[in-house]
Image (cartoon, rainbow, N blue to C red; front, side):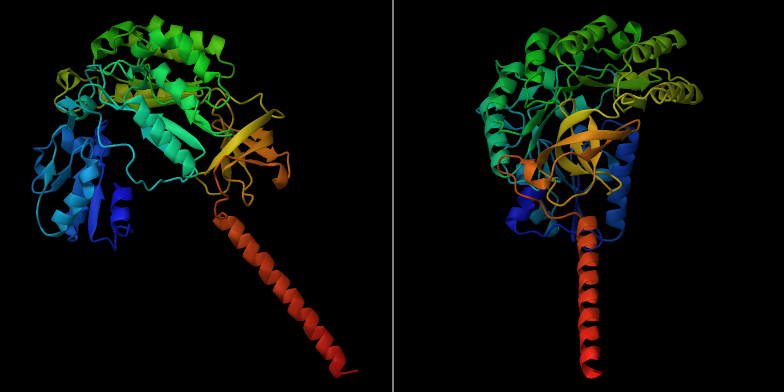
Length: 459
């Protein structure tokens, strides 16, 4: 949406100076919807034009706080300019219908739209919308509906375009990448092999989240793809609970053994594989024994990335009608699982290890560049000029719970730049350092010239 507005001539600005706020939304958790509602009220209170988009208005368009606002549905984002234009004129526009081509529902707006990337080195491609599950706690299904996949050719074309524009990394995303293609006679492995063929040298592909049921039949091929040198050995597979009873009440369509089979099969065949997972603590039917089974599952695999969430009853979902567990008990379970997660150090034995990493990001504290090794493990590096967008060799000097700190082993002339990428602007820290060095050299030069002048005057 930002890309289309910028291409049309609109200036993207901060909240205070903006004439119009375009607020996108997520409906997974209550707090995110609460933030969305508060932003709307804040914008309206100070007299801004407001347009809303995303899963919240798509899933619950009759919400009182959305009354009178212009709405862009999840599959209608290519009409954002039209909606903004009409809203600025004082009109209210609502585009919530599903997108169809030749009478058949499609995943969404075309992938080849102009884009303003948060990170110019990373392209995020949605490969399908909706899913095949009916999870009892999930509100996203109300907004996204059943599975609708983009054609492989369109996804591959977008990947080519992104690499041509200087990206070094592609992230595939959707509500469930494992289900990709089932509605159009294709499959995730088929798509991945086509993408691998267009990834330039030194660039990488990261596969997004997949639920266990739909990856089970593709394990052999997925393992082969994850071994490819230009694909990260990384997969996000949410388990949500270690109890078969809770999984059945959630309607997750797999059991604990299925999930364990996915983990163990892929770990045995993909060297250095990183598997991330999600847990929901305090689902209404979760007993103490059920929670213990979740604990034993996490103890067994020591996931390096574990997303721990408290259960939130989302409106109009089956789980919202179930009797809730007391809040203090949910907090106790969340705390216990969090303590387990922090009790182990996944990188404890890595000091001295050598890796080749692709450097694509700046750390949250703005003090380091971030590179990822083949296992998509985070390596923090010094902020050297021209380092972004390169592959470099590093040695690990120290580790923490979530990352490793590395030192560069090669000089700049030995760094390998991603195909098509160009050196990015220096970091603010590097620019500041360079200014100080320049100022110091100027002062030294002036002092030297003054000294020469004084010698000449008093000789």
